[in-house]
Length: 323
Image (cartoon, rainbow, N blue to C red; front, side, top):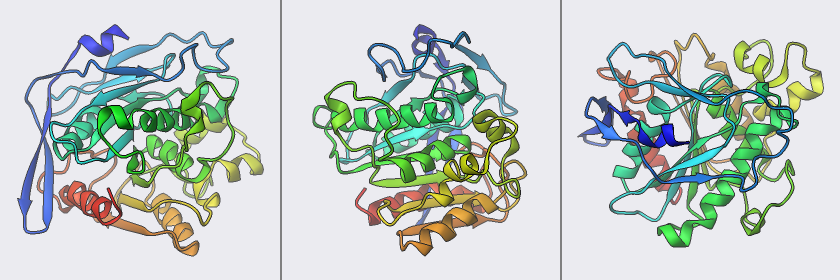
């Protein structure tokens, strides 16, 4: 865990405002990594007896020279905390992407958390376990961490100065699948109670799914994520259970969806399917599909494009729904 705390991140986010449209972008200013870390499982995560993978942080490189690290083989799931200078009474738990092979730190984690914290949100970046590492719960390992993580966030509300009923989740790419799974399966019993935090609800008050992996249907799936999550030949029952668009019920929170039509990694049909399922159940939802943006743009690959407006669009949606 020390290498997470000691390294330097070389970015910070900025905001440009014009009328009602706000444009966020990444900037190259060195900042120290956060040092406030919450471990999810006091006695270690469940089902790890046969896990031998070694946790590591890798530097992936970035065409703009920004820091772009990823955590592989998560052994100790954690929440990394970003406290705002002026809390607005709400919190966001972020689940970065990585195709269920890794969890990115900077682009979809720390960078976005800093942008949100600058706007008053207390942020928690979740480093969740990966289903291909041999955890006994298999595809439910990330959901275990997401449920436990959101409950722990709520348990910190009084001490950190936010309302436990104003907690959102924001997920990107495969982390969007983690977020969508929590949004639809927040009440699923996927682990045994550990402590008083587990008596709290795991249901987010709002969900933001950013170019998310959603369906496990071969017609629109992200093949890499499905292989890591379910293996090569999943059953029809597994495909249905782990496709959040097929798990939508009438008691879900409001959902914000964002995608680029030219996404060649995760087809835009993932967001379209989720939007249709949410509307069919009358869940408050808003979807933005931009002509260009590709995949994995976060805040750093949006400059000069209409998709640069997405953080402001999310912020407006969140405020309209109590966050």
